[in-house]
Image (cartoon, rainbow, N blue to C red; front, side, top):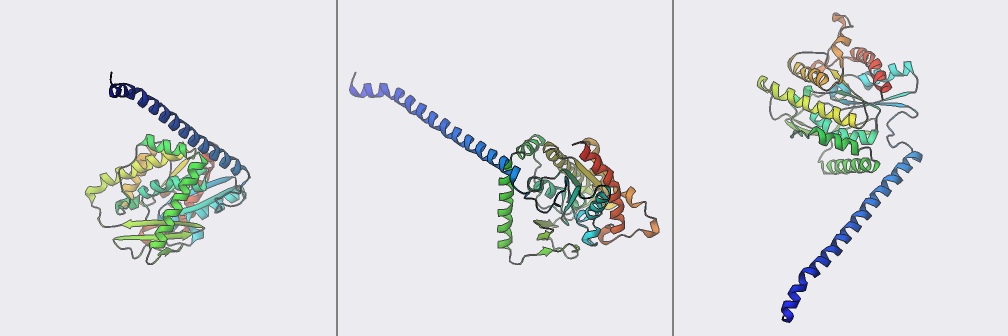
Length: 333
């Protein structure tokens, strides 16, 4: 056997030794990474026992935190901030148990269920509510911004379970805030909605910065395609799919979900209500029928504002019906 033959014969053994060393290095590196992540998670969990609540928008000392998300019906288009339904809900809960509840209004005018779904993980990570109220669906008819194939329910539940880790929450919120900062910095002219802004002059595709009650968010309206009656089935299916994923995420995160149907049942409101009722039946969602709430007001005294939005009196009646539903949901936690 020549020297060259001998070298070739020993090459497989040498390669095996190199591969073994590489495998040990990779295993060691992976172990160090996992250990570091576990240590960070432990430190964050310990720190949370002593640190003040970073969700400063909540009322200090409240033991039950209710997050209200959705469109302009949550925001309170056309009425003062104090007349939006979350404010009425806060006052009615205070009457039952003063100081025990904190209600946050995170409604954004024009928001679709797709946009609620895409932001839900960040909102729950940042604010850590005890209950979630969702009122959205009608804007899916015209706002096609951010529409994409819905994620599978299994993936949604996995992400929600991961959100129990404080390290995941910290990274989620940090990434959201950095994206928002870049958006605002790149805007030629920042457009900020005040709490009393009404959707009166929206173009085909506009992005807004919404800022109120310590909350800053961005939202894009995409009106480039006008819906037709033939689109009803597709739009209803999209709303139902988004509601299913919103419910799956919140429940996996340990948060009960309450949905609200619109008080008017015509045109695209009817399509949204069909989706809300179907999702409530299919996914065992608690649904509040706001039409029944508003109907307690005599017909000649009912007031309808821009785009069939209720007035403050009607929002108060809706809040009245929400109180026992919210309390029951929190009692089941």
